[in-house]
Each structure stands twice: as C-alpha cells, then as structure tokens.
View 1: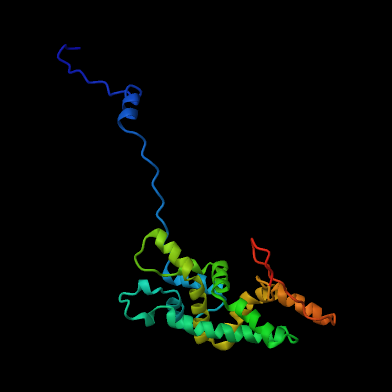
View 2 (view 1 turned 135 degrees about the horizontal axis):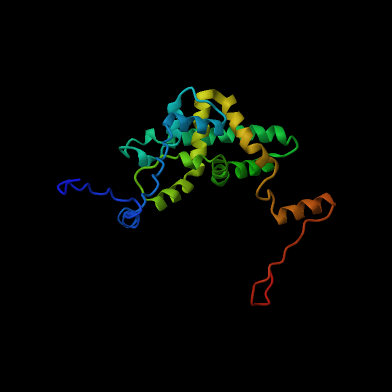
Length: 227
C-alpha cells in the first residue's frame, strides 16, 4: 500500500465520552402534566348534583354564587346573590315552619318559634353550605388568597339562602322544599342548642308536680349581701 493513502479517523467511542456527556448535559426534568381546566358547564353540573336540582335556567344558579366583588360595577348589585338571598331567607322560613308544624303537633307557639329561630340562623345555613361543598363555587373578585378564603367563609350562610331562592324560582315551592327537607330534617330532630334554659325547665317541673314556683336568691360576689 502506498504511503500516500489518507488516514481515516476512528469514530469516537461512546464509552470515551460517557462521563463528559453526563457532566455537560444533565438529565431533563420530567415534563409537568398540564392542569385540566374544568368547564363552566361541567362545574355547574357538579353543583346541581350536590344541590339535588337540575336548573332549567342556569343563570339563576350562576347568580346565586356571584359575590358583589366579582361584578364589573359594584353599583349594579342586582347581578349578585343578594336578591336571591333575600328571597331564600323567607322561603327557608316558610318551609321550616311547615316542617315544624307537622313534626311537632303538640308543641305550642313559643316552642315552635324557638325551634324555627335555631334552624334558620346564619350558622345553620353556613353549616349546610359547608357540608355540600358550596364554598368552592363562590365567584369572587380579585382578592388575595387569604382574604378570599375568609370572605368565602363569611358569606356561606348567604350563599345557602341564595341557592334556596334560586331553586324556588326555577322549580317552585316543591323543589325548594325538597332541598330544605333533605338538609334540615336531621337538624330539626336533633337541635344543636337547647330550646329551653335551666330556669324554665325547673319552673315547668315544679308546676307539673303541683308545687309553688321556685324563689330565687341572688348573692353578690365578694359581699355578704343577698337579694
């Protein structure tokens, strides 16, 4: 062979540069999975399932969850949940009054009033909304995360009443009664707070035993005076 034959360079061995490639080209991080965005229609269907009512007019459901801060103009508050809250408050009172009247045929007006007040207070409505997970659907304006969470908690009772108002307008009294009975019957049977104070219970017991009403003595602290 002639000495003029060109030399063909040997291709680099992969093993020769393994360390170099590892140092210069670190392994790529696994790609993050894109978050799936739930459509408005899908979210509305999920809320309807929790409520137990399919809306003929979806705008009523949307309005029931719209806080005034989410409106483009705070002047037009009629597009927030506030009007539905007003209606739902009175619808709830009527339905619960009807439930109490039928459930406690021997209760007098005073006892029924106390039971009603306990069942329709904001705390009870907020508890229903929390149980159903309605706070997740509240639409707020641009607020901080911490402020938004506190705001959602503070308006839970209002949202629940707004939902009742929306169900009433969309499906009538029967639909609203179905929602209220499903979420208030157990609360009606087991009141959270005692309906009567200890003094009233004692007086009723004494009267039932044919005894005179108890006499009470009030003693002032740090003195020997009793009146």
